Amino acid sequence: MLDYAALSVLAAVVREGTFERAAAALHISPSAVSQRVRAMEERLGAILVLRSQPCQPTPLGRRLCAHFDAVRLLEADLVPDLRGLGTPLSQPVTLKIAVNSDSLASWLAPAIVDFSRKTGLLIELAMDDEAHTADRLRSGEVVAAITSDSVPVQGCRTTRLGGMRYLACASPDFVARHFPSGPTADALLHAPSMRFDRRDDLQARWAMERMGAPVGALVHEIPSTRAFLDLALRGLAWGMQPANLAAPHLADGSLVELVPDTPIGVILYWTVARLHADALRTLTEAVRRAASAALAM
Image (cartoon, rainbow, N blue to C red; front, side):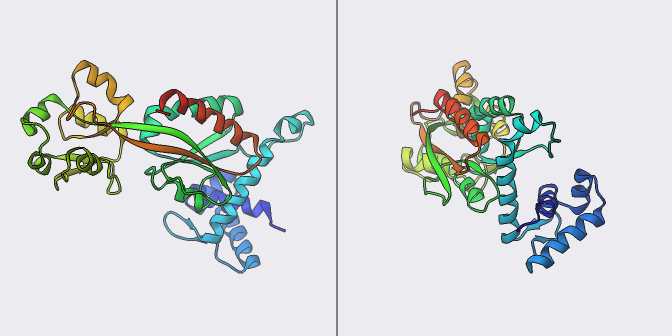
């Protein structure tokens, strides 16, 4: 039988990143945190957390933390009954989901607010590229993910949400300077572009699919959706912008498409753990409503 009191301490260390911050969150001493984690490791005969900066769970430690989070979600369903009995409530429940920055900036926020108002639960977002968020789910770090990965995840169900449209955009001044004759192969090779991070291939994909040419080596790395848009507006470089974020700027002329009507799409999926928890059902409904209003189905 697992010691859930000790598991709560282990989860706090992983969540907070240090023994000291875990102790402050739990209102106990750092030495008590250390003793409880060490006692659990000795009982199980395995290291559960690496004492690094920040602390990192081992594979077994991550699985135990995921199990603890799942139990806490199921406990949340009992809260109304426990309130009626006057039973003290435990610490607030946090639901961890992996999301990509573009979804959060463009359509997902209403779903998170709707979920929080209905359940009173907390949200912890793990930000990652949509092609890699499912890995967070496979590792047990999160219980749900917005992902472009349609490959089934064991113990989870996957729902198609729809497609995000991206447009190749830049400021009118940038286009005049770098693409006077349009985005030719030579111009694309020499014009600065942006990417979210080194795993972001949207710019290269658009250039090859729409123009039959590669992008050049002048690439700014901008790991923020808002900054990506703002820097394009200021003429730093061209890049693929979410269509719904770019729309008002295209309308007022502060952005232009490199080639009109040449979007590319990214199909998004909602993958969620198969836990019979009301919170996950409520979150799934909120995400699907927001997606149906914003994404191309």
